[in-house]
Structures are given as structure tokens and as C-alpha cells.
Length: 294
Image (tube, rainbow, N blue to C red):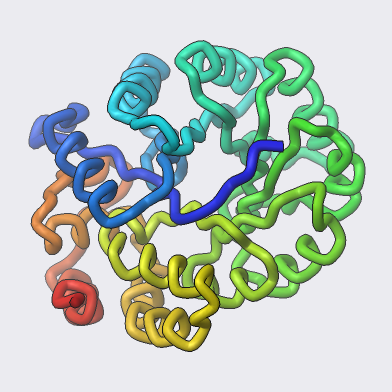
């Protein structure tokens, strides 16, 4: 089984003033994150506005990140689509580019049953042979990947992990205890990542890493070294910013946070709207400990 570890940013996608992908800003962003100590890359996820890009644009992002990646850096592609056929097509292209795994939620908009979820993921595996990191995000998808579905999928060697983004710690505990050694728990609920680590999450697919990579990487390293007290201190320092992120306009705030860090990545595409001056001020205030991180 492919072992996931460390902090892997769920990459934002930089756009220029005309709304086109800004690959110059993208390269600078990746280089800054690498310097902070991330362990890999997850492009074209929710933070990357994958649903607001064409297939051609998404392929260009995946290829760009793959070309910039260094040996030893994990590569996980977001290949979501509203249909199973679309997911298979996207996943085959990511496989051919050299990605090691894909991050997949349930098909959006359709609200599939648990039986349909099982059938969907098995169909993707049968058609592509790719390793899958399941993406549990019921707040966005409208349906949870329930234990009944996970029970049916857990012994498939291509179901390697689940990014749990429900925000419910009990789910993380349940996944860790029920599927230990079969499905790796990946932290996807950023404001309780410290708790996830205690329940066996060895990796963190982290949207906030885009604008606070140094502290989240230091937190991960501290926990791994056994310095749980230091990891908790870092979590306490960054939690106000995490809390503001979780309050709404998540991706817009990620991008504004990148600008505050000196790595501007442009605005989000519509229908996402811009931050108000009050929202910017609130997030900038919460980011102060991170902007002055030592």
C-alpha cells in the first residue's frame, strides 16, 4: 500500500487579472510551500477550484505540478466529475501523467445511494487500476460515505485512504479504529487536525497550508517527533485563522492569505465572490501570528 505522510497542500489554482491560470505565480507558490517542508502535492481539489475549470485547464494544472515535482514528493490528483465516466476519463489522464493516486469524492450533484457509491468506486478502480484516496465531504457533496460503503471497499487494495472532511471527530475515531491497517486516515478537518493526529492520521491534505505552510509543517513534525505539547501550542496559535477560514469563503480567504504572505495568487473565479473589506480585516488579524512566525 502507498503510505501517505506529512503535510500535502490542497493547492489553490492561481489566476491572473484576466481570470486565466497564472503559471508564473503557481511556480512561485509551489517553491514557497516546498521551502516550508510540505511532503507532496494535491492539485485540482476543492481548494483548487477544479469545478470551475475546463478539462483542458485541469490537465494543464496537473501536468504543470507533475513537471515541477521532485523525486520523493507525493503526487495525488483531484479527478472528480459529476459522472462515473467523467471520473474514469480524468483518472486515466492523471495516471498517464504519472500521478501515484487520485483524490475522489462521491460524484457531485447526484446524491448517490451507498450501493451506488460502492459501484462507482469499484468501476473507477476496474477501469484505471489507480489507488484512490476517498474524499468524505458531506457538507459539499450532500451525502456521506457511510460505514456500510467503507466496509465494502476496505479490503480493495486500491482504496488506500480517506480524507475525512466532515468536521466530526467521531468519524475520525471510527475510521481509525474500524479500518486500521486497511484504510489510512487522512486529516481533512483542518481546525481539529491535532485531534486527528492523536487518532492515527499520519498525513494531512491541507487547504490552509497554502497560506500557513510553515506552522502546519512544524506542527506535523513536532507531533511525529513525540513533542505533542509543542504541536498543541502551534495548533492553538493557528486556530483563530483556521476558525475564520471555516466560517465561510474558504477558498477566497486562502488566496487572500497567500497575498498576505507575499505570494499573490489572484482572485477566485465566479460564482465565488470577493471578500469584503471587513472579511479581509478579520482574516488579516487572525493571520498575524502566522505572518510573524519564527
